[in-house]
Amino acid sequence: MPPEDLPSLDFKSPEDLDQILRLLSRRLHYINRVSGESHYMWTLAELLAATGDLARAINDREVTAPFGNGYAPGELDQAGRRDLMLALLSDRMPG
Image (cartoon, rainbow, N blue to C red; front, side, top):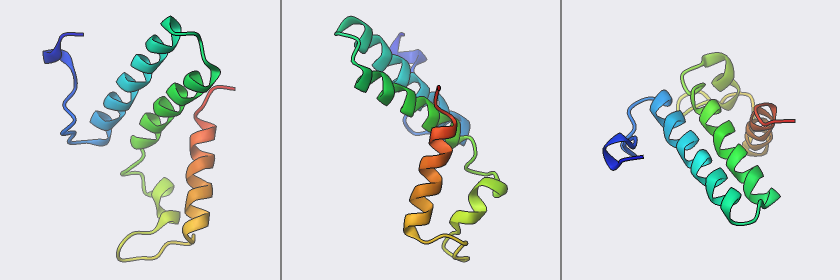
């Protein structure tokens, strides 16, 4: 991909962040294909893609409400936020 076609790391929207994370995922999959097909690297690449998908939910109140914010605490403590985030990522990863 020519440098002028690469997304800027100065992303302006959740969709831009998704695009960057998916590009990183595809690049990691490519590197993995030519360097030994590591299941660890494959899983890491899929995790990046799932994170990109989850980035699109940044403005979705239904998804983000349990986490709270700087003004309203939400319904989860730090461990609960971590567990929910990991569950949301897991739901977006392949089988």
